[in-house]
Length: 149
Image: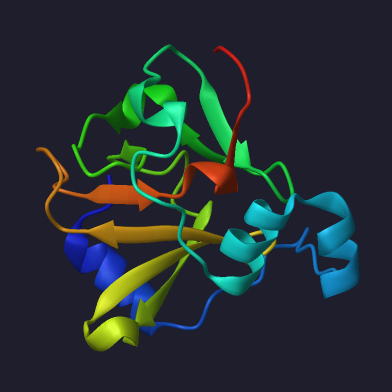
């Protein structure tokens, strides 16, 4: 289980490149994605809070990267954070997510990106439920529900 200290250490270290890293040009990404998906995942945008039904979806299932299909989260780790974005307590595996220190907008946060294709997903915060205390606050347009277990 990852903790906030683990996340901070990962955010300060260079990202290990996965063997199946996917790098496409902006034109190739634009051809694959909707304009909103491109803005959020490839340009580090943020969708409006409470703009997706995914926030209230709690059925068993898995959530993958909309860009490359990499498994990112299991629905068993999803919880209602009240923030207006889908929130998870842990990634599907420690290697699924890469972390970057984000000092934009006058604050220090930890950005989460897909480890396989570098898609911006959202941010992780140390105010989640026990036992790990993490809240992965994700943009719903960056995720695709990948079905049941």
